[in-house]
Length: 343
Image (cartoon, rainbow, N blue to C red; front, top):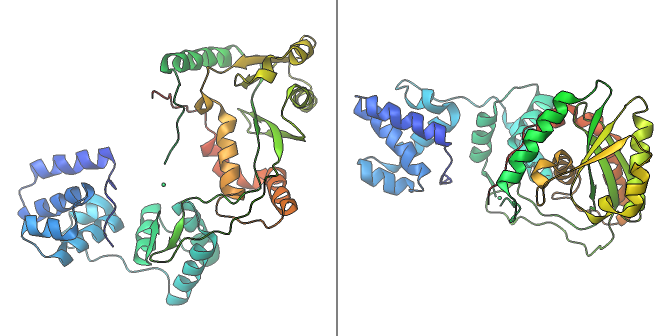
């Protein structure tokens, strides 16, 4: 297993470099240099040649670092960790990963805990997956026209708004999403050397969902409509007002889609408890509900094949009907921590 370059965080690299400057034991210096060079993309052979060591030693240093981090790497008496799973459990784990293709190591941690009552840390599971011959095969899209100053100003205004809210006021992030009946290939854990294949379909049908996410209690309100337009937006507003009958104001945070500014919606808002606050242009990163849509895709669509549209629609709607089962995952995902995009 050749390490993937840039597996160290910047903080981890800084700590190792600082320790190297202070370290007097040449053996430990060689261990630190091995990890830093591997992180730079050097091969085992290149590192071994540069440090006058053998490849197996460099491989052992890398394995030790994966298992126990800096503390294990710099412990000359470190003997490695015995695998906590027996062969039968390892076979079950390999079957699970091969079949379900988990998109995160955390899912594997939860699987092991649930089925074998054994606790693994994330780093230990990643090391285990590598030893079982799995690898993580990923890009991140960001808005190309985002304005960092506008986004910073919006977040400042949002903070002021939250401080001035009455106790009964609610902030709801709203947006429409259109999950399509297409197979959605995504990164996941596949058996090394095996082709990563996913059945494709040519479905063009999609589900139009208009939704709102409560920023405080993470309640989700959705409606399914033929189209996402002014009429379905008003329907969502009406449902929100029914859901929060005691709210003096419902602040709806949304993007600049034309239907939010339509005459029909404006007339409705004249006699509504809902007030719209618009996001800066090209700022989906500031709309909390966008994270929920990505989470929904990960749970429902990523690396999943639905032969018929009715099956796909059932799985999608079931996600929202049973969203409370994802409460713990959503709690951290939907925290009000926003990253300003500066292309």
